[in-house]
Image 1 (tube, rainbow, N blue to C red):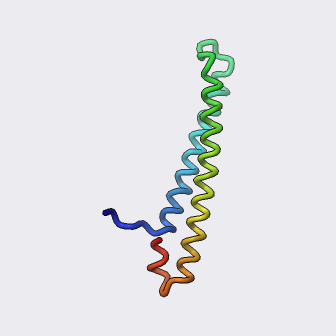
Image 2 (tube, rainbow, N blue to C red):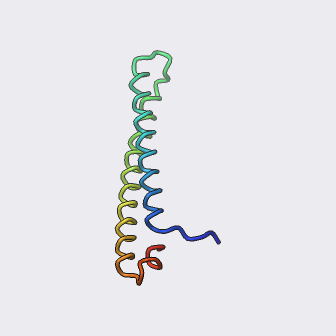
Image 3 (cartoon, one colour):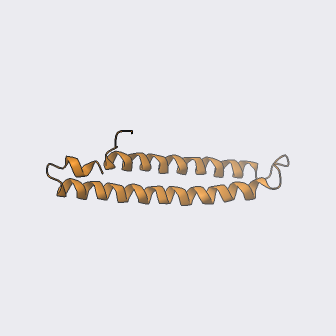
Length: 90
């Protein structure tokens, strides 16, 4: 069984993931704009890319929310647990 990761570390990883998804969505959006008037771009590309961008924005928002919730849980556990360590590992 893998070692348990502290909640604060998991929250930080989720924040990093949210930022990575957000950056990927921004790159895809830029690509859609660049190919907007390109006759070589397939007619379905813009709609498919926009659907992925929308899903990415939702995913990044949910990852950010989960990171904030885990961060808050980690802080609460550290205040409640004797010495802060046991409860902080989640």
